[in-house]
Length: 125
Image (cartoon, rainbow, N blue to C red; front, side, top):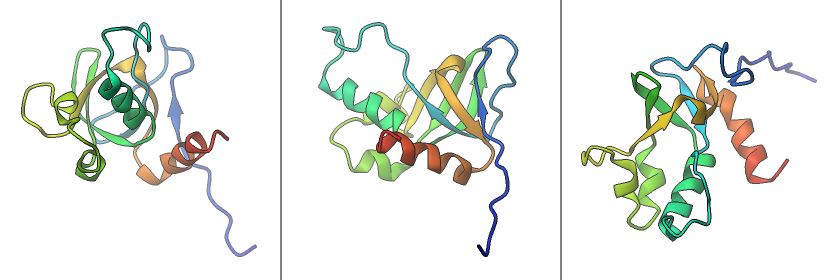
């Protein structure tokens, strides 16, 4: 073995009352909070948005109270059909999704730390 990988600091909400929180510039993995995934109010596009949020890493760019503004890469949305309206809360079209702090599952200041989690989720490991 030529290289031993160092321990990575990946944060996760375990005790939602006392954990530290993501900071400006941190990379995050989110899971949209919804009451009923099969609700009549959620169309097929919304289901695609949920999958994009779960399977991609975003970056925290702003915080207001308990809400975080998460920016996703342009490439992610360019490969999907007409989902940009779900990622522009203010009509700016900047691929930004507003998330509650408890919808942020993992975060780290290094994007590479979160990539194994995304890969594990994609293959159900």
